[in-house]
Amino acid sequence: VVEAGFQGDGARLSDRMTTPVHVLALPGVELLDLAGPVQVFDTATRMGAAYEICFVGPSPIVTTAQGLIVNTTASLPHSESGHVILVPGVRNASGDLQLPSDVSEWLSRAHAAGARIASVCSAAFILGRAGLLRGRRATTHWSLTTALAHRYPEARVEEQALFVEDGNVITSAGVASGIDMALWIVERDHGPLMASRVARELVVYLRRDASHGQTSVYLDYRTHLNPAVHRAQDYLVTNFTADVTLPELAAVAGTSSRHLVRLFKESTGLTPAAYQRKLRLELVETLLSSAELSIEVIARRAGFSDARSLRRVWAAHHGDSPSSRRRRENARPPRADAAGTDGGPAAER
DNA sequence: AAAATTAACCGCCAGG
DNA sequence: TACCTGGCGGTTAATT
Image 1 (cartoon, chains in turn green, orange, red):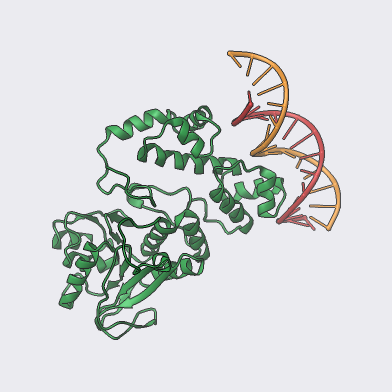
Image 2 (cartoon, rainbow, N blue to C red):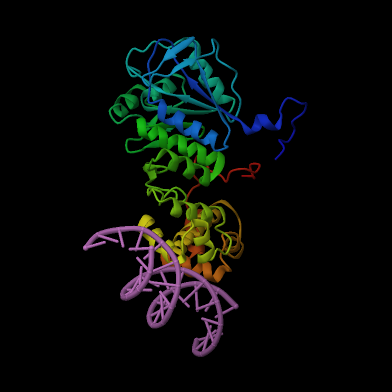
């Protein structure tokens, strides 16, 4: 995808493949909850996702609770669209924390330039000071939600969320939910397969957005530790529109068909075919709401042989028909933060 | 719409 | 003995 209207030689392809993650380090302040999210980006990078982690802030060296010693740049870099700025929690953020004046300004400028701002735990207060929570849905550690709502009345604080995404501002609740949030960012950037690999590597159980009670099927059913089953799942996620036969899947997993079915069900609670159906239905759901495609086209794109078979499978799962879902979807007002399909140029609106 | 074909699944058993 | 694994055959479910 070539950026329309771009001129000159300033942007090389390699630049675009790297998503800088700037970690904001405040002077003389202990950074909390940092290791988990950074691990996620680091692991993703080792798996080919290309994140570049960079500690920034007004102070030259910071020692974190995790024992990390980080070099920070003396000045805050210019921030461009697509970057992630990770703001870790700090002690006393809700109190009298002294914040260098240029930090708030830098944050809001970076956001205006298109950077994604991600906070962990009490860092939501730092976002608040930068004015980034105005009119936005947000969350913080459960013990601080009341204080946050009080301090920033214009923020719509959500209590029961692991993390909340609103526009390019993502706030998370606490230590572990910072990992969930980071994984969600990885899923956005590099797809569900990458996210599930990273999650598995870190042996975390994750969900995508507890505030909606929603889980992603790509990331679900991954809480087990059976490598053969994971291989089969990876294969299905990658090729879920293809006709994958059980023997073929067994070959990928390195077991017999009989044994794979047994292991699969033991590890995930689902049979391979049922898992594949869930993957396909997940795609159908997003296609139904995000595009003007016929049921027939959606069915084929999601790997069903035709609309008829989709309708049957859909009915078995949801009790109604795909078109009735779409009607209900359209009747509802569109969501504020239109989580559009990734990739392509913003198709209209 | 019904019948035929094919694939998935599972109980059961045997060998290691 | 307890457990893991693969193969066989029958049943169920999907597809044509």
